[in-house]
Amino acid sequence: MAFSPDTLRADFPILNQEINGAPLVYLDNAATTQTPLAVVEASARYYASINANIHRAAHKLAREATIAHEAARRTVSTHLNAAHDHEIIFTSGTTDAINLVSNTLALSGRIGNQDSIIISGLEHHSNIVPWQMLCERTGAQLKVIPVLDDGTLDLEAYQQLLDDSVKLLAVNHVSNALGTINPVQSMIRQAKQVGALVLIDGAQSAPHLNIDVQDLDCDFYAFSGHKIYGPTGIGILYGKENILNELPPWRGGGEMIKEVTFEHTTYNDLPFKYEAGTPDIEGAIALAAAIDYMNKLGMDHIAAHERSLQELATAALQELPGMQFYGTAANKAAVISFGIEGIHPYDLGALIDQMGVAVRTGHHCTQPLMARFGIPGTVRASFAAYNTEEEVTRLVQAVKKASMMLS
Ligand code: PMP
Image (cartoon, rainbow, N blue to C red):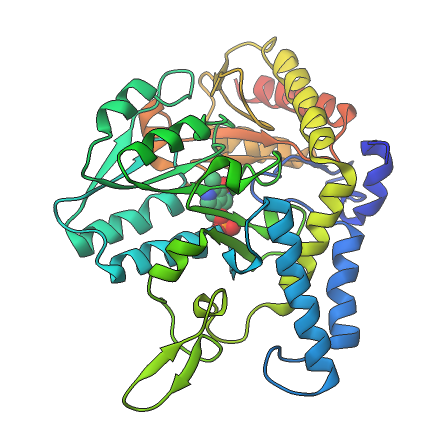
């Protein structure tokens, strides 16, 4: 299928609206992408035709819902090139997936007070706080890879941090605040050399890059449905079979058990061991529809298009006076983060919203990273498959006008 943002916009009716009398320019895709009709329809079809609780009942609807739910798991598994479908755990999002790993690790006793965990200075709060909580419970130490001025990781410092005490590396693949693409493949290889497990926060790479978890050789990879053109409330934890089998379950309840007596409970096999209670059945099915949609467009086409928009916007914005970019690495994905000298990012964001341009302003749930640059926040424009060159022009015009009004 030929890739044409102008054509595919027809799949996203939400984009076709006016904000304050101007056509909406939606550039907050790193927070949440819009859902195409194929996803909305998959979700509606589920409720209109097969809604029932899965795995339990012998009736036809329950069977159909179960088949659709497990087919969705297969779609995710194929998309990530997992070795087994049961390595795919449905969660409520990236945050939930990371908390699943941190809690099962805490319960497992694999991490003690002589051990350490490495994260990076680029992390979202949801890849910081669960590890701080794990360290509080276990006495382990949290070590942080510093960030260089261009928004890349200090890889020499990373090597210095790697020693036998390191039990886990938890790092994002792509920074949500700056767009930096981290060299996770080599970082994973190095972490493996000291015997550490590796969790990749894929919230910002799953929307833009082809992911092959076997090639990456990570132990865990997490992402959210709502950043890949799917619904909110659903996400994925990929985990290697051997480690998922070894770790204990975290949440208890229906579905995650084999047999329950008051004296003793035995746990279910993968993936159900980690999926207590009734899951978000419709969400899983709609998430699979979103993955099908992305694959129909082609991940490479999406990435190339977003890159050209990012380059176009960067070139035009840097002509404006006082412009300061954060995250200037060459290897970036779909994000431009900037500020204008003497202007608070919130004021800039609020003004351009009045002109119909939706961007995010603030710390982007990366307060330590903002502290690293000594700023309260940035203005972040983030791109998706449906954005156009015309929208980049609208963004640049709005920023120019707002900065003239504010300075
Ligand atoms: N990690 C990164 C890099 C993110 O960008 C986000 C969402 N902004 C998250 C984690 C958390 O995702 P969610 O809120 O969907 O759980």
